[in-house]
Each structure stands twice: as structure tokens, then as C-alpha cells.
Amino acid sequence: MNETKEGLVGKRNPYLDACRGVAAISVIAIHTAFYGYLFVPDWFKSLTLLIDVPFFFYLSGWASSYRRPDVIKTGKNILRIWAQWIVFIILIEILCLLTVKLPYSYSPLTDFSDLLKSFLFADNMAPGFYVVGASIWFIPYFFGVLLLNNAVLTIFNRSSRPEEYAKAYTVFLFLSIIWVGFGDYFFGLDVPFILFYGALWMMGYIGFAKTKRFSSFILTILAAIAGLILSAYVDYHLNSMDFLDMQTSKCIPSLKYFFFSLFIIIISRYVENFVKKPSRILSHIGENALYYFFGQGVGSSILSHNLIRPLSLIWFPVWLVAFLVNLLLTVIVAESTRFIYRRLKLLVLKIYEKTRRIE
Image 1 (tube, rainbow, N blue to C red):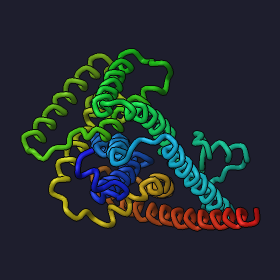
Image 2: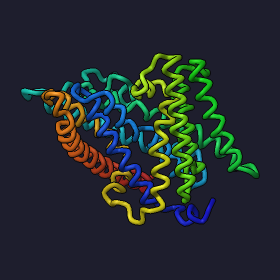
Image 3: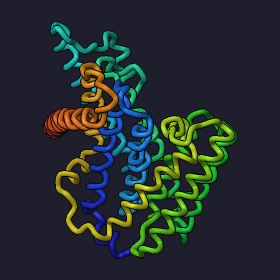
């Protein structure tokens, strides 16, 4: 652990939080472009994917590098995120029920079993706000990556060469992506996602692309460009995939999407050298990024139902206005959920303390 990391143990890295804030806002921009807005050109939709889920996983790995791997703490963190999700779903269902008698309503879940399934990230969650279910797919994979990588790193830390083992494990995950990309399966259908995002998480953990030298930054960018061109060429000839179609490359993750996602990672690590005081607003959003990931689906759903399809000639101003409205709606939903969750948490803790005193 280097001196910089030692100084940040037990503290938050404001720049990293600001990057998370950028990632959260970018997801809002992505879904403003993708859901229901047929006037947005495909090339722009692909461009918005530059800052997407891979960046979030990289940042999570980076944040984890400031503390020792601990499977128990990781499990508690997962339970905390899950509790936040359950509170969010309950609030969304209450909101849907309140609109039932209104001229324009949002469909609630009508079956209790469906509500329980939505707590477990099932597909048919919050039908009134369908973008919520469609955009939260990565959370179960996030849980899997956290548990898997922390378990492996815990074992590595017991050896005399934990950093070397961590780098070797990252290379293994990356090579497995290639295996899956050309072999379709690797012990199961969804494992490609675990391998892909697990590798990005580990890249954040080992500090991939961290440099203060401009020459190293340029060389890494050039390597990413070369990798993108080569992988896009292979995808085009083997899978007949359009070069600009990043959405298809995202599901199931491909090498083209991997190299495409590297640009924001490389740039963010180099820009870190010049940012002394990150934006407090971005840092706040980053500290509460998951609330914003949850909430953005509500705004996107509302806009997709109500936005008038304009002429293609004016698509960007309309997208920009829709994005700003979506951002405002997301802030309201995210901060409301955060406030209610914190109050419920305090209430539960008070009840628990009183119960302990009685015993």
C-alpha cells in the first residue's frame, strides 16, 4: 500500500467520489437517449456509452484498494445496498398506487409474489416505471463481483506476494473474457458478465492506467485505440456487427466494448493529477451513486411516456432538455429515497437498542 493510500485509509477520496458522480449522471444521459426517444441517432446513443457500467465497476475496485479485503464487511455492504433497494421499490409501489385514480396513472404490482420477486431484482419490477427494471440489471452482477473478488483477494493477502497474485488474477479474468467471447459459454450463460465486470473491478483495484507521465497516458490511449479497431474489425467479420453498435457489444460484453470503455478510465486517472478540489455536488452524488442509479429509471419512464417525438433536425436540443428534466426528477427521487432510508435505519436501530435493554 503506497503513501497516498495509507493517508486515505478510513477516509473518502473526493476525486473518486466525483468520478462516481459523473458515472451516475452519465447513466441518466444514456437512458435519456435510449428509452423511448426514437429521434436520437444511433451514433449518439453509442457515444453516450463511453461512461457506463464498466466505469462504475472500475471505480468500485479502485475504492476497495484503500482497504484490506474482508468478505464479512463485503457481505454487510451488500445487505445494506439490498435494504436500500427494498425501501426504494416499496416507495415506488406506493407512488404507483397513489396515481391509480388519476387521469394518468402508473401501473403498480398487483401480486404480492411479484413484489417479493422485485426485491430480488426480478425482471417484472415496477411495471409503471419500466426503465427501473430494465436499467438495474447490473446490481446482481455487482454483488457477485464484490463477493468473488474479495474472497480471492482475502486468500491472496495471506501470501507473501499479494500484489503479484492480484495482477495475475486480473490477467486470468481478462483472458477468460477472450475465451468466452469466442466460445460462447464458460461454466454457465451469465458468467461472461461476471468475468467482464470482475476484470474491470480488479483493474481498478490494482491501479490500471494510473500515471503522472503524459507519454504513458498517450501510449495507453493509443493502445486502447488499437485494441478497439482490431476488436471491431474481428466483430465485423466474424459476427457481422456494425462498428458503431456498442449496445449490442454491451450485451453480452465483448472486447470491442471493453476497449471502448477504457477511454474514460484512462482519462480519469490522468486528470486526477490536476484536480485539487473536485466538485462538492459531484462528490455528493458519487457518495450516494446507487440511489441515483435506482432513481434515474423513474425519470426516464415518465419522460418516455410523455415526450413528443420531434423532427430529427432538432433532436439534440430536445434530448438536452429531456436530460435536464430527467436529472431533476432523478435528484428528487434519489434524495427522497436516501432521506427516508436514513430515517428508517435510525428507527430500526432505536428499536433494536430498546429491545436489547429489555433483555
